[in-house]
Image 1 (cartoon, rainbow over the protein chains, first blue to last red):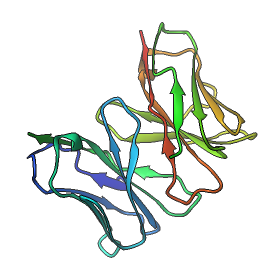
Image 2: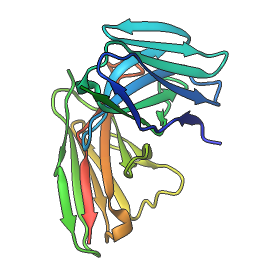
Image 3: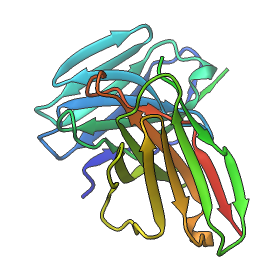
Image 4: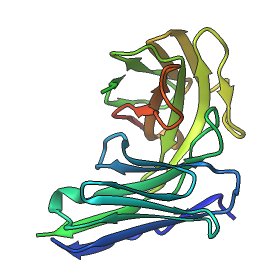
Length: 111
Length: 117
Protein backbone atom coordinates (compact mmCIF):
# COMPACT_ATOMS: atom_id res chain seq x y z
CA UNK A 1 0.00 0.00 0.00
CA UNK A 2 1.33 3.42 -0.94
CA UNK A 3 1.72 5.94 1.85
CA UNK A 4 -0.27 8.50 -0.13
CA UNK A 5 -3.03 7.64 -2.59
CA UNK A 6 -4.38 10.07 -5.15
CA UNK A 7 -6.69 9.41 -8.07
CA UNK A 8 -4.69 10.29 -11.20
CA UNK A 9 -7.76 11.27 -13.19
CA UNK A 10 -7.86 12.77 -15.72
CA UNK A 11 -10.62 15.02 -14.48
CA UNK A 12 -12.40 17.27 -16.96
CA UNK A 13 -14.83 19.99 -15.86
CA UNK A 14 -16.52 22.97 -17.51
CA UNK A 15 -15.36 26.47 -16.69
CA UNK A 16 -16.95 27.78 -13.52
CA UNK A 17 -17.40 24.36 -11.93
CA UNK A 18 -16.34 23.51 -8.38
CA UNK A 19 -13.48 21.03 -8.41
CA UNK A 20 -12.78 18.60 -5.59
CA UNK A 21 -9.40 16.89 -5.41
CA UNK A 22 -8.57 14.35 -2.73
CA UNK A 23 -5.82 12.29 -1.19
CA UNK A 24 -5.81 9.58 1.43
CA UNK A 25 -2.82 8.55 3.46
CA UNK A 26 -1.82 5.79 5.82
CA UNK A 27 0.87 7.34 8.02
CA UNK A 28 -0.72 8.89 11.10
CA UNK A 29 2.53 10.74 11.82
CA UNK A 30 1.98 13.17 8.92
CA UNK A 31 1.48 16.69 10.27
CA UNK A 32 2.18 18.97 7.30
CA UNK A 33 -0.08 18.82 4.27
CA UNK A 34 0.57 20.64 1.03
CA UNK A 35 -1.01 21.00 -2.39
CA UNK A 36 1.19 21.72 -5.39
CA UNK A 37 0.19 22.69 -8.90
CA UNK A 38 2.36 21.49 -11.76
CA UNK A 39 1.95 22.71 -15.30
CA UNK A 40 3.17 20.51 -18.11
CA UNK A 41 6.97 20.26 -18.24
CA UNK A 42 7.38 22.59 -15.26
CA UNK A 43 8.35 22.18 -11.63
CA UNK A 44 5.66 22.08 -8.92
CA UNK A 45 4.56 25.31 -7.26
CA UNK A 46 3.11 25.43 -3.77
CA UNK A 47 -0.59 26.31 -3.69
CA UNK A 48 -1.76 25.64 -0.17
CA UNK A 49 -0.29 24.48 3.09
CA UNK A 50 -2.04 23.22 6.23
CA UNK A 51 -0.56 22.14 9.51
CA UNK A 52 -2.47 19.37 11.33
CA UNK A 53 -6.26 19.35 10.92
CA UNK A 54 -8.57 22.05 9.75
CA UNK A 55 -9.46 24.23 6.80
CA UNK A 56 -7.59 26.94 5.01
CA UNK A 57 -8.91 29.28 2.35
CA UNK A 58 -7.00 31.37 -0.15
CA UNK A 59 -9.07 33.04 -2.82
CA UNK A 60 -10.78 30.37 -4.92
CA UNK A 61 -8.86 27.58 -3.19
CA UNK A 62 -9.79 25.79 0.04
CA UNK A 63 -7.72 23.05 1.62
CA UNK A 64 -9.19 20.67 4.19
CA UNK A 65 -7.47 18.12 6.38
CA UNK A 66 -9.30 15.41 8.31
CA UNK A 67 -6.67 13.56 10.28
CA UNK A 68 -9.20 11.21 11.88
CA UNK A 69 -10.05 9.88 8.42
CA UNK A 70 -6.55 10.40 7.00
CA UNK A 71 -8.10 12.36 4.16
CA UNK A 72 -7.23 15.71 2.63
CA UNK A 73 -9.03 17.74 0.01
CA UNK A 74 -8.49 20.73 -2.23
CA UNK A 75 -11.50 22.61 -3.55
CA UNK A 76 -11.31 25.02 -6.44
CA UNK A 77 -14.27 27.35 -6.87
CA UNK A 78 -15.19 29.04 -10.14
CA UNK A 79 -12.60 26.98 -11.98
CA UNK A 80 -10.82 28.62 -14.91
CA UNK A 81 -9.06 27.17 -17.96
CA UNK A 82 -5.82 28.47 -16.44
CA UNK A 83 -6.37 26.03 -13.56
CA UNK A 84 -5.74 23.17 -15.99
CA UNK A 85 -2.70 21.40 -14.56
CA UNK A 86 -1.70 18.43 -12.47
CA UNK A 87 -2.38 18.83 -8.76
CA UNK A 88 -0.15 16.96 -6.36
CA UNK A 89 -0.80 16.47 -2.69
CA UNK A 90 2.25 16.13 -0.47
CA UNK A 91 2.78 15.57 3.21
CA UNK A 92 5.47 15.13 5.82
CA UNK A 93 5.72 14.11 9.42
CA UNK A 94 7.98 16.74 10.88
CA UNK A 95 9.91 19.82 9.92
CA UNK A 96 12.96 17.93 8.81
CA UNK A 97 11.16 15.02 7.19
CA UNK A 98 10.94 14.28 3.52
CA UNK A 99 7.91 15.16 1.45
CA UNK A 100 5.79 12.24 0.30
CA UNK A 101 3.86 13.02 -2.85
CA UNK A 102 0.65 11.62 -4.22
CA UNK A 103 0.55 10.53 -7.84
CA UNK A 104 -1.09 13.77 -8.95
CA UNK A 105 -4.51 14.42 -10.49
CA UNK A 106 -4.60 15.81 -13.99
CA UNK A 107 -7.29 18.50 -14.24
CA UNK A 108 -8.65 20.02 -17.42
CA UNK A 109 -11.04 22.97 -17.26
CA UNK A 110 -12.87 23.44 -20.55
CA UNK A 111 -13.96 26.94 -21.63
CA UNK B 1 9.58 34.76 -3.56
CA UNK B 2 12.42 32.31 -3.46
CA UNK B 3 13.58 31.21 -6.89
CA UNK B 4 15.31 28.00 -7.86
CA UNK B 5 16.77 27.58 -11.32
CA UNK B 6 17.95 24.50 -13.17
CA UNK B 7 20.28 24.16 -16.09
CA UNK B 8 19.92 22.82 -18.67
CA UNK B 9 16.16 22.67 -19.09
CA UNK B 10 16.49 19.89 -21.62
CA UNK B 11 19.34 17.61 -22.60
CA UNK B 12 19.65 14.83 -25.13
CA UNK B 13 22.67 12.58 -24.92
CA UNK B 14 23.93 9.30 -26.25
CA UNK B 15 23.97 6.17 -24.15
CA UNK B 16 27.15 5.87 -22.13
CA UNK B 17 27.83 9.57 -21.71
CA UNK B 18 27.61 11.48 -18.42
CA UNK B 19 25.29 14.40 -17.91
CA UNK B 20 25.51 17.14 -15.29
CA UNK B 21 22.45 19.08 -14.12
CA UNK B 22 22.82 22.23 -12.05
CA UNK B 23 20.40 23.49 -9.44
CA UNK B 24 20.79 27.01 -8.10
CA UNK B 25 18.97 29.00 -5.44
CA UNK B 26 18.97 32.52 -6.83
CA UNK B 27 17.94 34.70 -3.90
CA UNK B 28 18.46 32.62 -0.79
CA UNK B 29 20.98 30.30 0.77
CA UNK B 30 19.82 26.72 0.40
CA UNK B 31 20.99 24.69 3.35
CA UNK B 32 19.27 21.60 2.00
CA UNK B 33 18.57 20.59 -1.56
CA UNK B 34 16.55 17.68 -2.81
CA UNK B 35 16.66 15.83 -6.11
CA UNK B 36 13.55 14.20 -7.50
CA UNK B 37 12.79 12.11 -10.53
CA UNK B 38 9.44 12.12 -12.28
CA UNK B 39 8.25 9.74 -14.99
CA UNK B 40 5.36 10.74 -17.28
CA UNK B 41 2.05 10.91 -15.45
CA UNK B 42 3.68 9.76 -12.24
CA UNK B 43 4.54 11.44 -8.99
CA UNK B 44 7.82 12.89 -7.83
CA UNK B 45 10.14 10.31 -6.36
CA UNK B 46 12.81 11.58 -4.01
CA UNK B 47 16.25 10.42 -5.07
CA UNK B 48 18.49 12.10 -2.53
CA UNK B 49 18.84 14.86 0.02
CA UNK B 50 21.97 16.96 0.21
CA UNK B 51 23.17 19.41 2.79
CA UNK B 52 25.83 21.93 1.95
CA UNK B 53 29.30 20.60 2.60
CA UNK B 54 28.31 17.05 3.41
CA UNK B 55 27.61 13.86 1.51
CA UNK B 56 24.18 13.34 0.05
CA UNK B 57 21.75 10.90 1.61
CA UNK B 58 20.29 8.61 -1.04
CA UNK B 59 16.90 6.95 -0.94
CA UNK B 60 16.67 3.22 -1.02
CA UNK B 61 17.16 1.84 -4.49
CA UNK B 62 18.99 4.88 -5.86
CA UNK B 63 22.52 4.09 -7.00
CA UNK B 64 24.84 6.67 -5.53
CA UNK B 65 27.62 5.75 -7.96
CA UNK B 66 25.33 6.46 -10.86
CA UNK B 67 23.63 9.59 -9.57
CA UNK B 68 26.41 11.72 -8.16
CA UNK B 69 25.31 14.68 -6.11
CA UNK B 70 27.53 17.55 -5.07
CA UNK B 71 26.32 20.40 -2.87
CA UNK B 72 29.46 22.48 -2.85
CA UNK B 73 27.95 25.81 -1.87
CA UNK B 74 24.83 27.25 -0.30
CA UNK B 75 23.47 28.19 -3.71
CA UNK B 76 24.51 25.32 -5.96
CA UNK B 77 23.92 21.59 -6.11
CA UNK B 78 24.74 19.39 -9.07
CA UNK B 79 23.43 16.01 -10.14
CA UNK B 80 25.62 14.00 -12.49
CA UNK B 81 24.11 11.01 -14.21
CA UNK B 82 27.10 8.78 -14.89
CA UNK B 83 27.12 6.60 -18.00
CA UNK B 84 23.53 7.38 -18.79
CA UNK B 85 21.30 4.75 -20.39
CA UNK B 86 17.87 5.05 -22.01
CA UNK B 87 16.16 3.92 -18.78
CA UNK B 88 17.60 7.04 -17.11
CA UNK B 89 15.49 9.21 -19.40
CA UNK B 90 13.21 11.17 -17.11
CA UNK B 91 12.30 14.58 -15.73
CA UNK B 92 14.67 15.58 -12.94
CA UNK B 93 13.57 18.26 -10.50
CA UNK B 94 15.47 19.84 -7.66
CA UNK B 95 14.12 21.73 -4.69
CA UNK B 96 15.65 23.71 -1.88
CA UNK B 97 14.92 24.82 1.63
CA UNK B 98 16.66 27.29 3.92
CA UNK B 99 17.14 27.50 7.66
CA UNK B 100 15.02 30.60 7.99
CA UNK B 101 12.04 28.99 6.28
CA UNK B 102 9.17 27.04 7.76
CA UNK B 103 8.50 23.34 7.47
CA UNK B 104 6.50 23.60 4.28
CA UNK B 105 8.76 25.95 2.37
CA UNK B 106 10.40 23.80 -0.25
CA UNK B 107 10.99 25.67 -3.49
CA UNK B 108 11.14 23.70 -6.71
CA UNK B 109 13.14 24.30 -9.83
CA UNK B 110 11.58 24.12 -13.30
CA UNK B 111 13.00 20.69 -14.00
CA UNK B 112 15.41 19.17 -16.52
CA UNK B 113 14.21 16.73 -19.12
CA UNK B 114 16.86 14.13 -19.88
CA UNK B 115 16.57 11.97 -22.96
CA UNK B 116 19.17 9.26 -23.48
CA UNK B 117 19.30 7.80 -26.98
